[in-house]
Image (cartoon, rainbow, N blue to C red):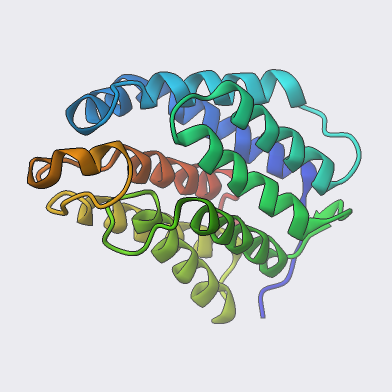
Length: 214
């Protein structure tokens, strides 16, 4: 069983890194969304994560539930389209599961992330193959869980999760969308990466970046 602790400072570092990656990739995310959505995913995620980091700063106070509730509510109120409610619900559910903790074991962090995915499913009703963020997040969390259960470090498990998220993202390319704005295009949605799955891969890339080897 993997040991060690994850601090709230590291959670903030993860969020900050996600903000940085979204900022770097916002034009690309918007380009993807212009093909099958409203051409605003990059701008929306940039605005939302910028607002999150302005709200929480760099030194978290209180407990995980307070921090993650702030993150979730900020995304819900500052991000348009489906992304705000879905990512917002993800972090809100994470906070509910984490409760008043100020540190996590890697397994507890994985459980909170899993609860976030459950929240997304409850809100968006997405399933595998629908061409949504679920297609990247679900395999990522399965890889994270399996890697931690096998005794890997959080760094190694996060790398496995990121690789699985990338594979899930890439697997959306030939899919016909069954949920969201892209579903209106029918067969024309095939041949394009899903923007939400792409930003989800960035979420797990940032997690791997936050927990370097050693």
